[in-house]
Image (cartoon, rainbow, N blue to C red; front, side, top):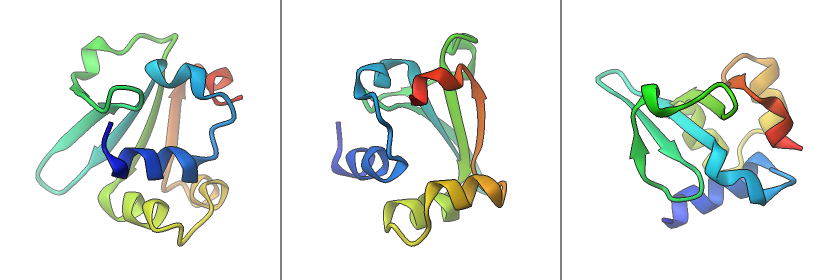
Length: 92
């Protein structure tokens, strides 16, 4: 797992790190969308994510705000810059 993903995991304040294999990060840029598994750091396809998993969506600017710890994840959720779908129990 690369250092950038570790920083994001820490800044997301995920309580249970045992579920990282079921949590995916979708990063949207002007030209492309990438989905990354938080445990392995590997890219995947949207069709490989089941409803029992969790998908955290954001754009590249929001990712940088989160990575650099400029904003709290809760604030980004409230501002609808981060969207979550799937099993939110995985965040507990």
